Amino acid sequence: MLNAFERMVALRYLRARREEGFISVIALFSLVGIALGVATLIVVLAVMNGVRGELIKSIIGLEGHVSVYADSNGIDNYNDLSRMLQGVEGVKYATPKVEGQIMASYKGRAMGAMVSGYRFEDLKKKELLMNKITQGDMAEFENGQGVVIGSRMAEKMGVSVGDELLLISPEGRATIAGLVPRVKAYKVVALFSIGMFAYDNGLVLLPFQEAQVYFKLQDEGRDAASLIEVIADDPDKVQALVGKIAETVGRHYRIYDWKSSNNHIFQAVIVQRNVMFLILTLIILVASFNIISSLIMLVREKGRDVAILRTMGASRASILRIFFACGSCVGVAGTLFGVVFGLLIAFNTENIQLWLEGMMGHKLFTDELYFLSSLPSKVDFGEVLTVIVMALGLSFLATIYPARRAASLDPAEALRYE
Image (tube, rainbow, N blue to C red):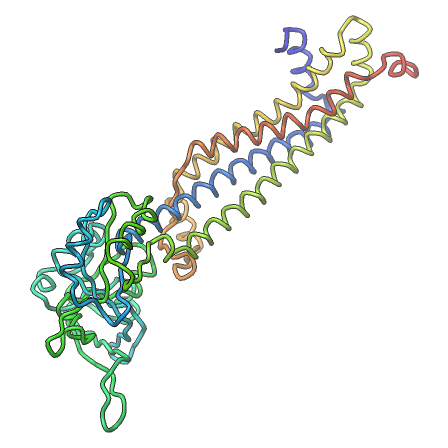
């Protein structure tokens, strides 16, 4: 704690005179550097948290938390298996699903896509999708007719609600002329826009029975599904649930959870987050070195003043606290400005993104690269506190050496040539 005398001297030294203008400029650069480093670090951490949260929300909102596949082609007893899995502790519900890769074509435009076949009563449970229907309605889909596609896929292919989309499967039938792919036209009854590029650009929804017929899972008396989707009570505890499901279904099934299936995406986000944290921490560290240089110059400039204060009775500890307060004020002010500025940006990232895109005339973030169509942000105040503590800690450490150097000045040596 500083007494009144030490506070007065420290504040006077912070108000540099004209001949000390260069020192004050360095101190100002230190303050700005710390503020920018802290603000950028808070924004980057918030955006990374937002991206991860949106990815998880989209993935677990559309896909099952656990997927159960048969070793052979399809699951014939999918109704019995679904009821069995719903009895496992931790399972909310289990539904059969048909899936397969296809080529979608419309008026000469073609692109690859993934078909997912659902029963309408099961699809209604996916609120993330049902709440994102932008055009058309699901009435015909409920009656087992038509397809539902993503808005970006429709935009790229020029498809509208009511148009017929051609689905081409490479798993065709063998004829005397060779392998003939399966081709069938379906009416587009609705469009959805989830906000995750992978789904909006490459997902086609078919009624369950129609998908069975298309992929030959309902043929010659056969009635099968591609997999069973399991929805857990707690998606974060899915790895423990996988063990229980494996014990229930036996060895003839392959089981995947959403974390392992999408591990590459989350690992990429974590690596980017850690690298950015390290780089931005170095910015704060460089600003802290500026505090050291400005304080050392201030000590040299105030050497005579320090000597006079010592001869008047000021202790070494008092001198140390005065210069420590000078450096700490720069660190505290920079951290405070950085936190306020960073939080303002973090809470308004989408508005800032739209403003920049409108001013520059093009998108800042490519959907294909970043998976998402917008820039989400989620502030974790625990991480904000960590950034504050780190910035203040580096600032305080940077003041120790110059302050000790000022306290160790010998008054006789400092005044010898005055």
